[in-house]
Length: 390
Image (cartoon, rainbow, N blue to C red; front, side, top):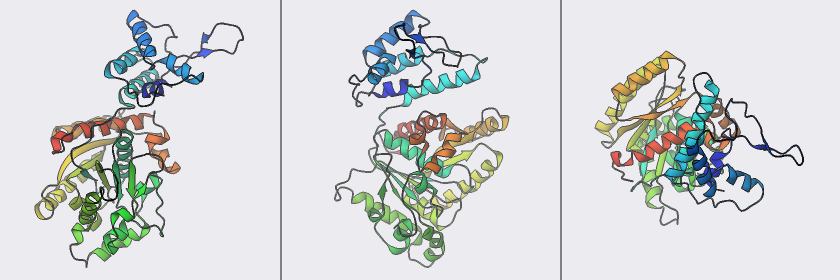
């Protein structure tokens, strides 16, 4: 089944009602106030016909449900096909906000789903950090990682938060008996010995955090080169990938605890880039100022290559003036690093970890999943600006 066929599902197109034997199929109402199955214009007729001929339209969906051979999954719709599919979706005005929202999500799904993202020429290591809690660090790390992996890239997540929330969201075992990041930092265990594959997303692996990591801050104080232990372990892991018969890792995302202790310092020293999730509230701006000062200290003394490459606005509520003001202020101060994509408040994003999943697999068609998919695409397309030409 092609990706376009998959994204065509659930777009609000009426389906034939065959409940009456012998009668012609009738269009069931969608409940969104959208028009029936008759295209509204000659252009949409042509677009629908062309899409169906290529195996990407509603007819392709019905073929698959009838048991006919689906289009191979490897067939990715081209830009023209995506555009034509998006044009078929009816417009909705301000009088039907729900229909407008669903239509926008449907267009984004067509544009984003099934895309292959470019591989960087070298591994990009990003630390996802913000010392303020509850801004979406872990949620951002695991969902962007899943989105990149679904787009055909090799991704590694390193969980340095003793709470282990990233490990939970990725479905990775992280109880006390499981070797994890603590063993790497304190015991010197090779990173390759603790990495586990994510069961739901091929190409995504993770180094889990166990409760033992809570004591690592104290144990690291007396150790030699305590700030760079994670960097050395990661470098050894990446260099040994070919010897282990593994593909090269394209992206490494390090999830940090909500503090600026030695665990976060290790994450900063191991990365070249910092991805900062910012909640669209006033306190987040205060926390950003403090974080930037600490990044400058790391640059001056431990890791001169570290820089803030990406800022992502999370928990965005377009109904409030405050969220718009915070977003505007951040964009004015950091015009080159703030992503165009914003992540809205989403129940699906919050529900996914309770099922041991990211929102990318829990509900791939939700607005939250689409937002993280768009953010991952933006992040990958900015590779050339950060010295990792795609």
